[in-house]
Image 1 (cartoon, rainbow, N blue to C red):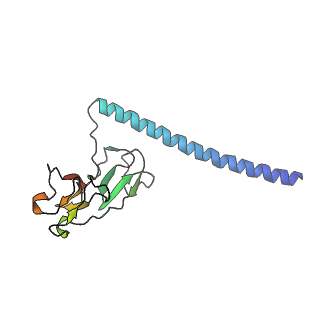
Image 2 (cartoon, rainbow, N blue to C red; image 1 turned 45 degrees about the vertical axis):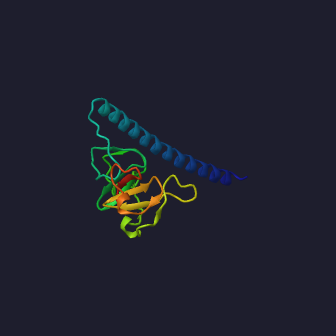
Image 3 (tube, rainbow, N blue to C red; image 1 turned 180 degrees about the vertical axis):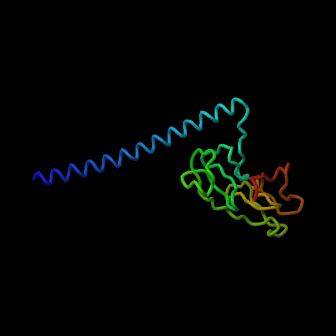
Length: 163
């Protein structure tokens, strides 16, 4: 190998090492930021100052969200990609992504007498429906009737969240 070829190879190795080094430095900075956020969250929690966000509620700048938690903001539902606090959905692509919201059939779209499968069914998946602004999952197989409409306190339905 000629001296010029050796210099080219060495130059490529240096470029590679610089790129890897820059990536590692960025990852270290992100880890430091995460550590600081967790330390502050722990302090706030101990002091009783850190309210816990609930999935699907409107985003609030002072709340800490962990991976996969959701919030609503600017007309969309957002999912946290990692721990985040103070990073606005839509402005922080490294912290948030738009979550595609599943659409479920309306309870009222089923005819009376239709079999509604529950979590107890061995051969069919549990029916998930939307009713009165909420998403519900059927717990126990039954026939559709107004008597068994999804509602709080029902033994046949469990509320999963807001529609």
